[in-house]
Length: 233
Ligand SMILES: Nc1ncnc2c1ncn2[C@@H]1O[C@H](COP(=O)(O)OP(=O)(O)OP(=O)(O)O)[C@@H](O)[C@H]1O
Image 1 (tube, rainbow, N blue to C red):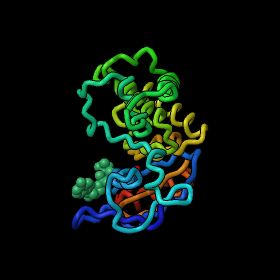
Image 2: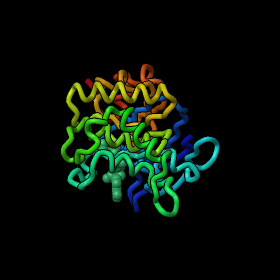
Image 3: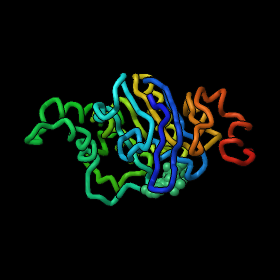
Image 4: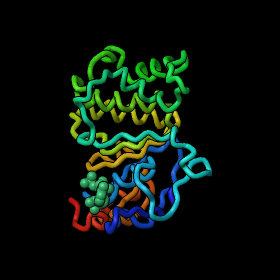
């Protein structure tokens, strides 16, 4: 899916020659130190930053054609949680790319929103403002938006950061369920203690790729030390 990808911000090279071939049903962790290019990679797949080289394809063609199938969830600090919108309003935003010229919600749009709210167990919270939710509930609301969008690929920037244990566990269960249903999850992740339980594949990245494959093979002391440029406990 990703071949020889490079991304530059003016003089800064954020990613160089990254390749990653995966498929639906997988949960892929992006692991590397701060500034390694994990967010940049998610943004490049989402079409939010320009590639300076390489290609990203999906179902055999360039991803531009498939943008509706990709949902990007930014890092928590990049979201304006005070923005006045209800949980349902946020989930409805997932339908906006599919609405016709008059931006009118059809029965099938409403059905998709209802389904997403139910799947993410948000029915009781749907009329609350997003700022009134816990961190875990906010993540669920954002994921519900991608489900309403009918996205097949979820690009999550540090989805577990800042969550307490019960919220982390319920998000982990949800991601596993979504992957089992055939979605592809790609997420940046910082906690080496949990990467093997939360994900089945990993890309080790530090501007360059230091390996892509099953977590069991790549999450080793040696490989992590090489990725982080320092010994790992
Ligand atoms: N908008 C931007 N303009 C210029 N440089 C940027 C921009 N965004 C990121 N960079 C640079 O690109 C490199 C990769 O950044 P990126 O945010 O992708 O790393 P990261 O692995 O996600 O880091 P972290 O773990 O700290 O979130 C860094 O050197 C960063 O300073």
